[in-house]
Image (tube, rainbow, N blue to C red):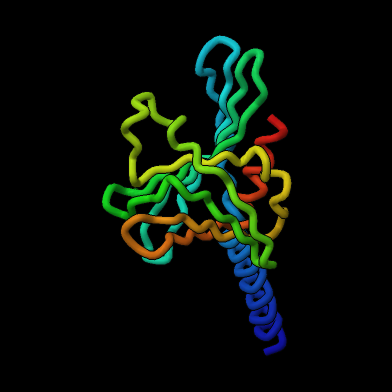
Length: 173
């Protein structure tokens, strides 16, 4: 009986250890790698891509990227793209970034620079200038992005601290 009790105790401990290891792997943040692209000789782009969900459950592509061009200052932008019909974004308004402590920053909409045909701006996509505010984003604190729209209440996108960290790491590239 004593041997059986030891066996059960050992099996229980091993089971608990396996459960803890599995739990740690399951909740570990997934980091997307920073992608590096050469757009032209001497012109590099480093980008971080994530999928964010809005309050309606719609998916949005978030692409933070840093562009380095010869003889120009590096720029860092955030492009947000929803599926057609998701929302009509108001390009006259900035992106509002609010952290969980209530700190609010804004990023200028520069969507006109995103398109070669300046008369055509996608209503479901926008690009914002992160350069002036990127280093003000606090590491380890989640963000909420608020997008002004033409056809509905504003769109809210939640951004995890891991994504904020990844966006800030673009400055190291």
